[in-house]
Length: 176
Image (cartoon, rainbow, N blue to C red):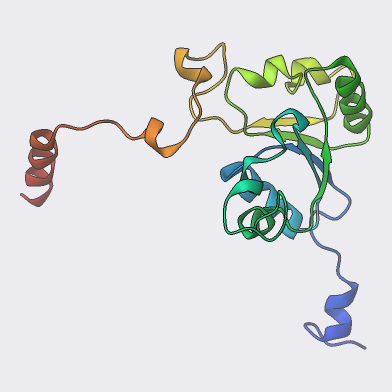
């Protein structure tokens, strides 16, 4: 009998997300980090990159490990498969639908106005695979939700410009 925690017992255990396939239309930071965690837990993550812009912008963050490759990009995308796919073209949509048919989830961290335009919403994909889970990580919600959905969710967009007098008042109240 094998003792719990022994090398042979842990070698037989499957990762919790083994057998789960996730399509990831994400770039730069939060999206790739989130899907990296899913890959670390055993999911098969297929990263879809836009060939029109040279793929994920994180590929171009120095220092470089090679052409269109950087340690920054690799640190968030290890263990993932990657393809380029033009989701604005009907042929790209056809390939996306082929992948959705055999996938469990579609994740994106595009600006809030883009998932609908790129066919990444459940409304657009439910006829292809009614059990697919669609997840969007946006800075300001989706197009129908809020006016700022067309803005990217980078830090400088999210931090409210603050008056220093207002800040001092808040700090004084918290100390009192």
